[in-house]
Length: 140
Image (cartoon, rainbow, N blue to C red; front, side):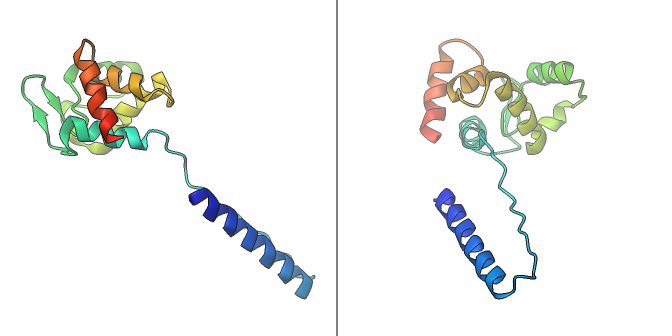
């Protein structure tokens, strides 16, 4: 649908440009188009956040010490800080923007085309990852 509207907009602008040039050939005009950024992980982010915390940025799992909308464990935060030379604190896991940054870092290591592997890697390991993927897949 968006592609259709975009193409229709371009066609209308081109037609207007031709009409303008024929009426007033001395007028020079140009158009600058901006495109929306491609966000290949948006659907997956929404699904993972729903499964992990139902979107609750203040969620906390006492057993795993996982926090925030993405349920980031302390060990994941330490690993991220070491790999990226960042210095995020445990409290930063409650910040959606920072948690999303951490999630996207690990997602990009896998690549945007393999949602299943990204979700399973995010969840951890073992047979629970199969159940986790099924829950995420239902939200996609």
